[in-house]
Length: 126
Image (cartoon, rainbow, N blue to C red; front, side, top):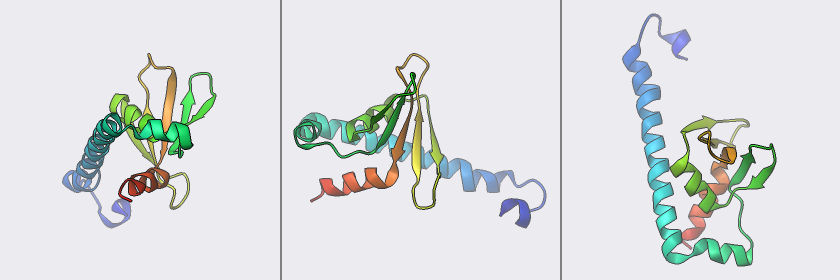
């Protein structure tokens, strides 16, 4: 849209459309991850899920290319400790938040299923 509707340099438009909103979204993700981690530490939700079966919130890709299911606590940890976050839209209505690891980690990336993660967060209220 920008390329077809706005000719020339529009650096403040790009900043408003992309940079500021992305920064806010990443800050919100970090705040939510910290909140969920603290809530889990206090309420032991992940312990309950270990006993009853943990809902999946995406997948964790390891350095050896193997994959593991991503629990909500994993999501919180990966968001908190990742090198950078990236938004991905591989399919319509299936957004993902990609957490890229630091080099020293055993994992390469965490692919957070936003719909599944939102569903989990919504169940916390019930």
